Structure formats: C-alpha cells, structure tokens
Length: 221
Image 1 (cartoon, rainbow, N blue to C red):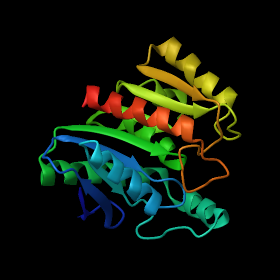
Image 2 (cartoon, rainbow, N blue to C red; image 1 turned 90 degrees about the vertical axis):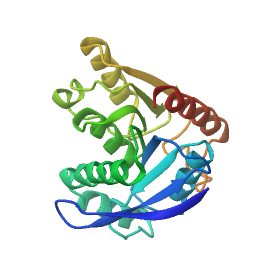
Image 3 (spheres, rainbow, N blue to C red; image 1 turned 90 degrees about the horizontal axis):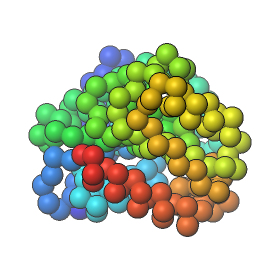
Image 4 (cartoon, rainbow, N blue to C red; image 1 turned 180 degrees about the vertical axis):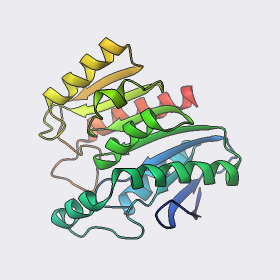
C-alpha cells in the first residue's frame, strides 16, 4: 500500500484529497468522507484499510487543510461548510480520480458529518455504484426519494443525534418509495467506528460493520 495527494479544483477554490493505493491495480474505488473533525489521521487510516482490502481509497479534504482540535472547533467548521461546497468537492474528487487512475466503479462511505454527505451524494451525484453512510443525517424526502444507488445505512441504537426517530423515518421512506436501502443497527453509540475515541468505540460492532461494508463494496463495485 502507498499513499499520495490528489489535488483538484472546485467551484469555490482548490483543495486536495488523501489517496491510498493498493498493491495491485484495480478499477474499484471508495470515497471516504471525513467526520466533522476534518481529514485527520483516523480518516487516513480508514482509507489505508480500504487499500489493504484491494480498493483505491480517496478521502477528499472538505475543510481544505484545516483539522479541528476540539469538539467546539469541529462543530463551527462543520457549520461553516456549505452543503453545496461539500458536494462539489466530492464531485470533483470523483471526476479527477476517475481520470487519473482510470476508474470505473465508485463506492462512497462516510462517518458522522461524512455520513450525511455520503448519503446525500448518493442521492444527488452521478457515478456511485454503492453507498455506506455511517450515522449521518438523512436528507429531506424530496432528495432521498431520488436515490437509486444500493445503500447500507449504518446507525447506532444509543445515538442521540441520529436517533431512533430519524432512523425510523428513513426506514419508512425506504418502504414507501421502494428505495434500495438496507438499514443496519448496532447496539452502540454515535461514532462507534472511531477507534481513536475509546469513550464511544465499540470493537465488536466496528469489526462487524467493516466486514459487512467491505463485502458489500466488493460485490457492488
């Protein structure tokens, strides 16, 4: 596995992404969207793990070089990021990576804020063959009902943000609009996949979710 930086333009201003490349060439790629902390070492480690599984992993930098030092700063940075800008960064990361690495199939995943962007990108952007948002917010119904990308939505039963009511609303919309969404719930807390946060990390749930999602991407990409 090796890593490099992918630089690209956006409608706002240029940014870059962290790219983890597997040992063997592949046309299968996964976009990994950051938590509200920024493109930190944890997100880069997840990208590296995808590369170890045989995928090209691209983690676009939605904050353009900034990483939060504490939850208050992270919250302010997340609020300052306009939805259209975040989606445009993801779109341009895909287009640049597609051309540079000769890619044909993209999956998208993300965590917390990144889960919000991953699900919305799967609804609004073209080119994704699979999506796996982790405990991200759910877009409004008129956006959600456009989803045609096979999606696994991962949530946690102890999550106070993406709570049971929000997940139930997603499941209800899935049934009414016959959306290609599978809802997976773990008895865990928000951010349970983040092994750098021992207060919420749940190893059993994280291992199971990783096996599920990497298998899902292997099948769909």
